[in-house]
Length: 113
Image 1 (cartoon, rainbow, N blue to C red):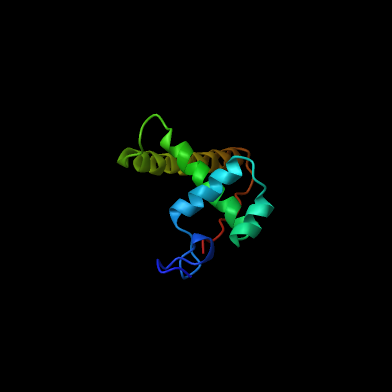
Image 2 (cartoon, rainbow, N blue to C red):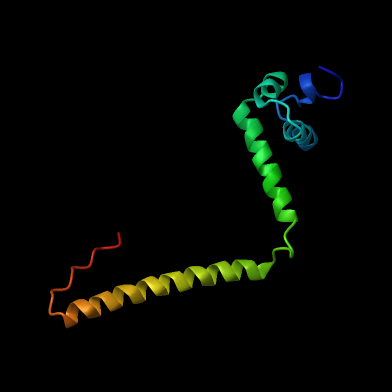
């Protein structure tokens, strides 16, 4: 170990990689290095490297969006979920109305436990 608290391969004492080292590893993958070889060299699993790559790419994609996320996005998602729930309720009510008009017995309602 070196005096800077860094162990083999630039990892911290607890075996964690800094964000800079993770970025370097991901860039090496994106430049065509083999995942298995890099995994062995760095002493981390291939799954860990793949996860770093996916997170890196997702963050890059998010940064390229035309407008940054704000409080409106959360409200939009909440309202979309509400519209979906209301739509499902309406479809169930329409089905019950059709069943009632046809003189068929209504299905018993299941408990929501």
